[in-house]
Image (tube, rainbow, N blue to C red):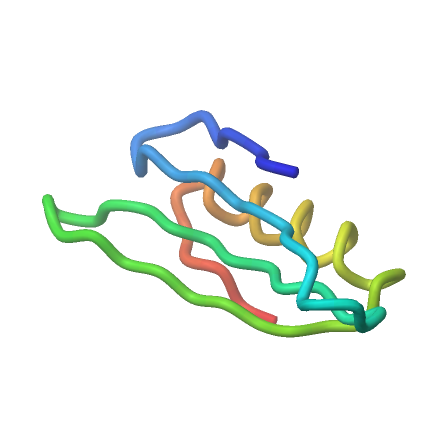
Length: 67
């Protein structure tokens, strides 16, 4: 799943499966001052969507993701 984030940071947040495990990889990428930035975290399946939306909201507001 990919969330395209509006705002000035040209950001996206993605969720991908990690093998056959129940853990998911959440990654956010954005540009700040013309430089690419990113962060990621492996979380249990149920928490992945909440984390992705939290990061997307932070990026849309012009901030960087925090966990």
